Length: 176
Image 1 (cartoon, helix red, strand yellow):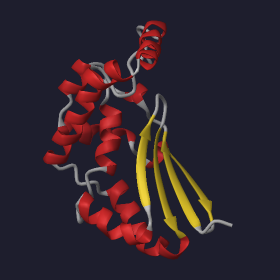
Image 2 (cartoon, one colour):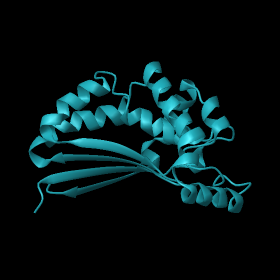
Image 3 (cartoon, helix red, strand yellow):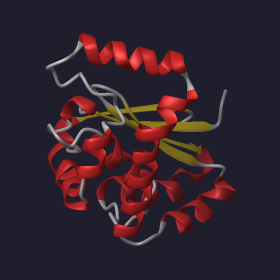
């Protein structure tokens, strides 16, 4: 029996929730939640605090859902829960974190996906052709033009409008 506890928060909003002209917004929003800290702690402070607990967390955006995953040993759940709560309820949304993450996403969309795998790039091109004219047309990370047009205010609005309790399914597994 594992002593780990895994908490998954699934929001029913993926890249299909990206507004036209802002393709990539949902993924950038999720990345900023998990890589930007909270109103009381920076990401670095959080990582240093949870390191001795062997805890971790991440986000994953897909076409129709965004999932936040939190993993911690059962003995540290009480200490770890404020981190979970802070990241989800009071993300910091600092300009410098936004700028860094947007730059990374822009680089991925413009350079990495094209040069890393011909097969992956071909699958994305086929999906774009198959779903042309729908909200499924663009890749999850967005388009070059879409990512470049995203502002921090766009991220805050996307978070406020789509990362809500009415859009949420909670899953807990492990030894709790």
